[in-house]
Length: 107
Image (tube, rainbow, N blue to C red; front, top):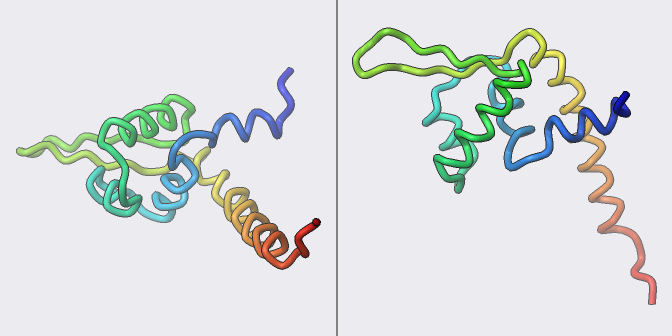
């Protein structure tokens, strides 16, 4: 059985996955909104990341029967359970980065 921490890291590893998950909390977003939020990300990369998150059961893709078609991405119930974990990881990473900046340089 895979180490649970390794499984989590593998799940969110990849360009922008953690950012995507956090941006979809608390509301569904359209592809263009997610892309705009992330800044410089290609359509191909974003599509790949969203599909991987969908395959893992974290993100839901909903197509609305309109012309032109409207597609929204939202978190699944399982995806929502990951948000508090990601938030804590973000706080930890910020604190870690600050400590690294303040640490004396070894010569």
